[in-house]
Length: 472
Image (tube, rainbow, N blue to C red; front, top):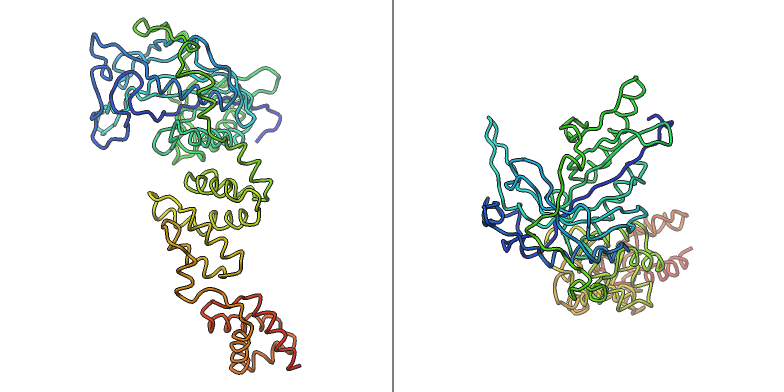
């Protein structure tokens, strides 16, 4: 890739908000309903004479997002009509915001934000082939938050990182599930390349529905534009799509401008005085603002967790919830927190994927961690018990005691086991005495089998060395 070019990228991201009802009517907000057109009404279908009523909860969620990214909130706002025709827009316009968005400014993941506004989602076209297309209006009118960044991103990795951090923040705030595979978060990238300080011609790549697509599409488009300019061609301002199979962008249409949409204030929706509504007050939003991912990262780094461990914890709601509770209980004990992180980000992960409906039982899990730290059980026993107690209010200590799995600290009992192993494995003992250290691990394994995992491995090792030294 030619490094003499400067790449400039700005992102536009749409996120469906998690509310009970749609943006401008009382229909259930469930765009994924298996039955097409189950959640619709005359407002969704743009019947004559219907009037839209803004969803108060959706507005509050956007303002809550503003608190998280330190954006400037508007005191006054309004909704506008964005005029264009497409089969999934029954009104021939979309209710959106233009001149007075709810939020301006702010930063996320080191990227400056331009604005955040609220609009309604469109219906979903289903193309059946042979010239037949169907329209499902379950998604029509779903609250849609649109975020626009400043053109301050210069490579695909940074753009992808920003998208991941945005998804994590939306999920942490509880304002959107933001699952890209379900269309709940959709990324559009505006990309230009230039050899001068002046911005190049902007090309928009729309509806990127995975992080891999975001990175791949931007990398491809940068290369395509550079090669076009290098060959003496001209980059055209246009909207392009991304073909995941061919791993290339393709032209969709020439890029529209704000003038093409003929924005004007929606006469059916009153102006919104945000400052006079107690439900939108800054004080109320600050009170319900949860701990943000950036603050959690700082805390977890201080106790010695790795970057990968922190990422796994924050990206899984159930692990995040459990570890947050563990941190409250053991904030001064980094040893148990680090041990807990090890198990939660490794052995617990496949168990969580097997049963996505259950939460981690923190009481049972923390008791298991304490048993390990107190050398009451070994790691093999702990992993076996984890499968039984992760989602259950069962005492791992009771199970271990009942099954004889509590590690014995009785030296006399351990010596008896060790002497049996030495007698039964004379050739291995001779190898160890000849200087082959791996032989000791074999002997330890045999002793652990005889104790059914109840012997303390460290105690075993010390006594083994002591006993074997007598044979030298």
